[in-house]
Image 1 (cartoon, rainbow, N blue to C red):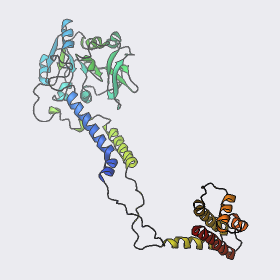
Image 2 (image 1 turned 135 degrees about the vertical axis):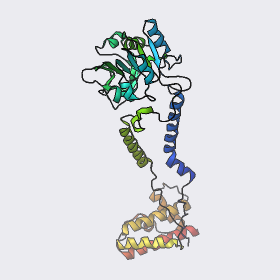
Image 3 (image 1 turned 135 degrees about the horizontal axis):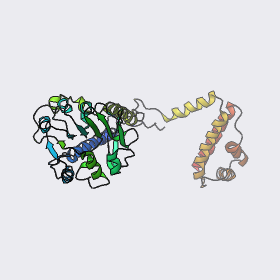
Image 4 (image 1 turned 180 degrees about the vertical axis):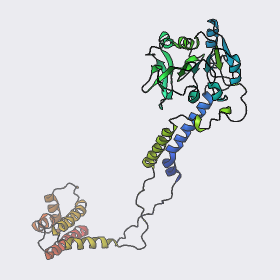
Length: 385
């Protein structure tokens, strides 16, 4: 008798390949974040010797070209890097604020005159009536679509970045889906204008579209310009200077929703790419099972269900499959050919052979036993000849 072959056991400990499959998405996301952070650091507007919106800087991020155009039109441009220097100039002037990281915004808000703001962090003190839209706006060429003379005379300009809601009594230009990239409104001592992005004022973007016209129109108001920039040698200590801004004050207003969406995205990715249960693990059986036990067990099931027809079909199909190659017949041989070959080989009655292999199923258990014995007899005779 043959013995049933015991199945092989399979290891279930994680391999290097399975660990890579489970964590590759998180590794790729981490590498992407590192690449983006590196790009921001290396390609930021204030990298190296470039000084963003500095009227004395000739780099692509500087604004010396704009300052020279204003001076050619007779506008007095004074570059300052502190509130004290701006206050010392005195008089009715236009305060152009490009950076407030190292200045006291409370003292800066006390200066009289018009204001042009491109530093979104200074809105709470210098433009308290302006509210930022919590959705960033892509910078691109936009039409003014407003009645503000400075914008309508310039036409389309490369602007965007941040959008604002129009304050009471004010006007807005260069609209986006939820707000305006430029808003202007009157305050106690003059007019305050807020721009979502000042890229159009840089040496790189100034020649495009109506950028130069818009920048000149905003700064050439018939008043001297106090151009406030970040100091070249900032004082050590708190970046917010004496204004006392905390780290949370420097974060965008929509950072909370961004973190919530990031957490939801991470949870969905973890649920999607999480480790699933593997295939069923089979173990080596502790005992040897005889192959005949399977046949005996199936026979008992057939007997309990009185499935004589199915038992006879299984018995006949197995015998025909074993007899056909021994008789020199192909697998598709017809029943008459099989019966004739068996009768010629063994000398048995063809009608009895045909009834045993292709006849109706037996009606009782005795007939089933007789059928099994006769089929076994036929197989023995064919094998012995």
